[in-house]
Amino acid sequence: MDELKIVRSTEKYAVSYCETFDEVAKEGKFLSISGGYPVEDIIRFIKMCRQCGYPQFLLVEPGGRAVGWCDIVRRCDEPEDVGFLGVGIAKAYRGMGWGSRLMTATINDAKKRGFNEIRLEVRASNYNAIRTYTRLGFVKIAYTTDGVVTDGVAEDVWVMSLYCRHITAEGFEREKFFDKFPRIRYRFKKQ
Ligand SMILES: CC(C)(COP(=O)(O)OP(=O)(O)OC[C@H]1O[C@@H](n2cnc3c(N)ncnc32)[C@H](O)[C@@H]1OP(=O)(O)O)[C@@H](O)C(=O)NCCC(=O)NCCS
Image 1 (cartoon, rainbow, N blue to C red):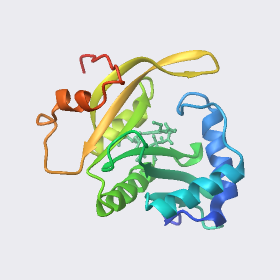
Image 2 (image 1 turned 90 degrees about the vertical axis):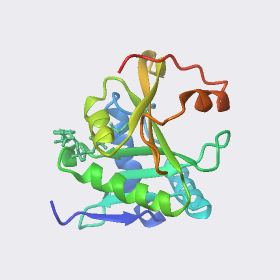
Image 3 (image 1 turned 60 degrees about the vertical axis):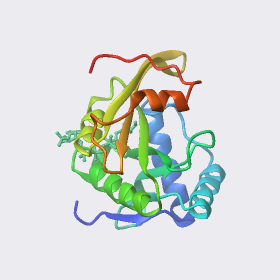
Image 4 (image 1 turned 45 degrees about the vertical axis):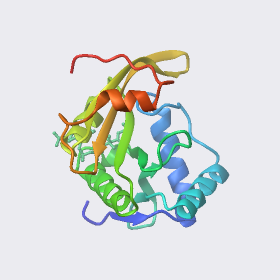
């Protein structure tokens, strides 16, 4: 599998990126939606990431087919230096270290671009993903009941965070975090 490449996203990969996203979404147990987006939306998203300097990398087969994606983008109502990570790999390539490599490349780029913290949301049942994130240094910071609803089925969600500054997990100031985001009402769960 060494022939796969990790490349910065461009429009030339939009169709296969769109198909891979759709396949992963349709598995129905990982993402927050159960189907993909039209290719025009994916193209718009790739352009937006480039214009805003948001890191977005793809895992690409030798033939040029994108079989995984990872991006870190700002959410408009949250601080400028906080990015939200999204990731997915086609089923055939999971569990071989590609997801970790793809996320590491994207996180390193995010650090260079001034992100100080990376957050993500993950379904509580997605043990493989949670283990991988933990290995990369993410810590669970909050838990929300029924945080995602797809096709009428609700599931609990963990919020995980990676500090890019020199701060330990123990040093994470939860109260300050929640002061800044009063509209989010997460319920803590014992880890
Ligand atoms: C989460 C995800 C991106 C991780 O990528 P990956 O390439 O599978 O990750 P890695 O191979 O680097 O590590 C996965 C871990 O699960 C293990 N694993 C074994 N078989 C696996 C399988 N079939 N699928 C996933 N992980 C598997 C790996 O050995 C590794 O274990 P370790 O952490 O103890 O070393 C990928 O599994 C995926 O796309 N899942 C579906 C979409 C998804 O969950 N997206 C995230 C939503 S928050």
